[in-house]
Length: 246
Ligand SMILES: [Zn+2]
Image (cartoon, rainbow, N blue to C red):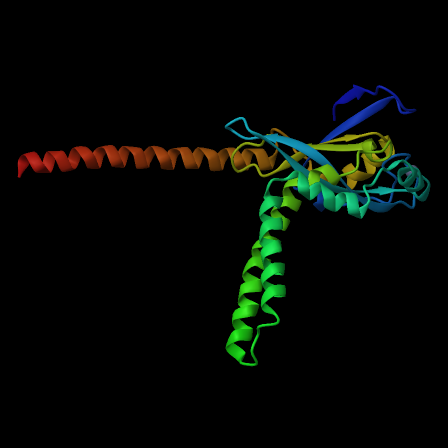
């Protein structure tokens, strides 16, 4: 546990905890993460994370977590949280250029559906052809809409409130075979103690069993790769040798 000074709030310290596994799999105590009161129930919220890949291009991901809060802190959170209306939520999709495809193909589905409806005969084949045509454009439109929604969803995630910012998390860079691990920044000491007690088996220790096992696996992999490289070189020379001899 490392301790860093808090900038504001009644608590003098903010504690950090590194736990393995995804945040949504944490075992949660019934203690409020903000004020330490008992009888807290889990609340789900999301935040936006900026991720940069190896080529340097950045994208935004939405990450969720669940943590317990008491009814009083929940009420404060509800007062502070600024959620977008469902209509504004939907409008965000239009900030993605994929929506051009959705509008064009959706328009084509409506156009053909409407225009060809009066000329439909009673026979099954013409009805099937009409359904296939409308479904073809309709499905492309739906696919574009879903892609646009995924690309712009981060814009609809509400900003953190004073309550939800009392528990922060971020992924740590893990070595090969070590598995995911996250660093949690925790405001209340009682919540810290309760969370730690429930998740003892997930505490990341740089010299712990999990780290040592990963190191053994890494060593094994490097040895296997080394042997493979030697075999390849040997084989190359061996084939050359055979070619010269015979
Ligand atoms: Zn509370």
